[in-house]
Amino acid sequence: MGRLFVLLALVYLALLVVALIDCLSCEDFEIRGLPKAAWVLIILLFSPLGAIVWFVAGRPQREMPAPPGTWRAGNGFPERSRPRQLAPDDDPEFLRDLAARTRRDDEDLLRRWEADLRRREEELRRRTSKDETES
Image 1 (tube, rainbow, N blue to C red):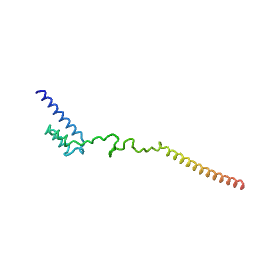
Image 2: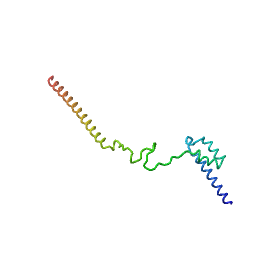
Image 3: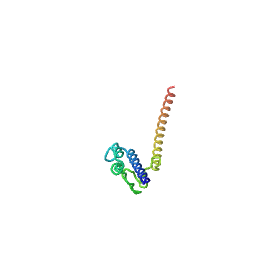
Image 4: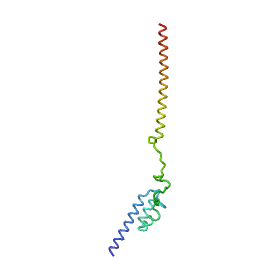
């Protein structure tokens, strides 16, 4: 009989400790029914019934895990159906377009430099021919 009493005391103590740790580790907004402080008092003052009531009525409800491959709101997409969006440096089409744009920009810049160079050379020729005619 003494062993049974020790075993029941250990179960009682374990239930009390687990209920207190569970209650204290939950966020305030998750706890159902009463504030956290009220649940702690209920667990301590009305034990073991308070601990049992905590597990039944106060503990936050945990969602059951969904079967693999199903999508639930807020969990994102399963990996195989996730929309694949490449980063710009991994997208071959973007890189081709970027190369074409860079080539066009470089060619445009080169044309402008050549036109500016021709204009300056023409001005220099006019000045030198004007200076030669004046002297």
